[in-house]
Length: 342
Image (cartoon, rainbow, N blue to C red):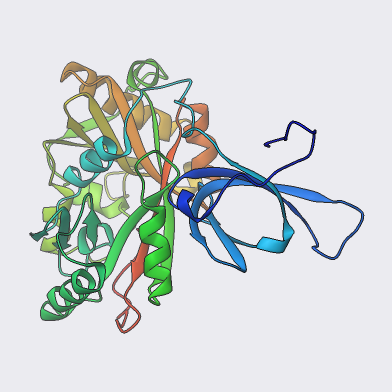
């Protein structure tokens, strides 16, 4: 915190610092004379005479009465990762988007509007990597019109927690009544150590998601649209660990998309009765070896914030959170229930 020459704490942020990363200290109870404090670090997204609004790394919005502030300052952007590959948000967001392509898309300035008949929010939401080229209200009107023409609710995918992410856009959407429905995280790690983990014997790799692979995939009744999205990406591989009998679904599956230096992992699923036997690690190791052969050196994946088991596994495999992402739904949109996980 900032301390004056006289040794007193000072608030050295103003409305001019909106959009910057700040650290503030506040009284936990403005009426408490006992001096109990708490600290908040994040992007300053609003400042007025009564309330300061800060968006944390995970997207949590903290509203602080101005009267409760005792210190505050602008701080540098979050430090670079100490392990695994360095990557900007824009680079990783672009790689993730190419690994899960929609059936159709349109440009609105720096925004990409994506649609795939409702199969996952990722393929049916706006990816705002840049300026839309219109005032925000006009851009949002165009977004809603585009999705209404396709019979879909309007979603915008935003990100928080890294340099160049969209805390200010999140705040503007919330002020306009857009509802945050789902949050997840993108994690990154080094590829070579993953490839060295476990012996991937028994893992079968294929360029297609065959019937056996789909029998384990958690989404039931996979349509032609879903198959097209699953097969999208620069270089796509599907991994299968066969079940004990030919008439059983696979013991484990996984998907990997190789894109330049990046290998993206998804759909890593294991028979619940066979968990904690190293099958997920074997699947990812086999896919990692293939990705190394194609020239990749870094890895990424997406994990939901409440999936404790997956988060523990990926941390053990050397991954760490890079940024969080969120899906905002237009207030007048109607969710028809076709969406599953992000």
